[in-house]
Length: 146
Image (tube, rainbow, N blue to C red):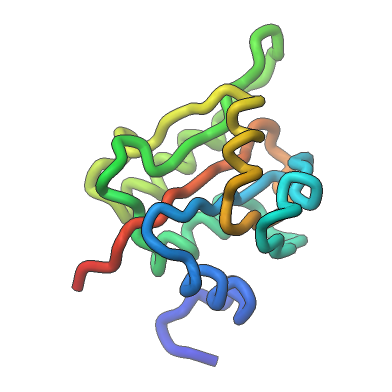
């Protein structure tokens, strides 16, 4: 056990977060996301039994967001014709605001199939049991400045 590290961050996940470098991307996926097929060239970490918000909050305690891009946090856009509400996005923006002074301005949207394309190039994908639809989030790592 370590002090100051959220218990939800497993040793495997901490190792991966530490291995990642500036500009590497991390996907935190909902329960419907095809993590294994999208992550054929990535590290796939299972966080079954957990939702995206709790994982996102824990990760952002130790993971700097990229300051060299306008939107280091990206969400999967709702497909045209889908009648889906996304209140979880507001939760994500509140979490981001706790750790990045840009707050909601650091959060963008990516069209669903472009999100998949970009997820295929991610360093790692964290598969959660999140039940909310369109609850996937992609983070771009920045540098630690302390």
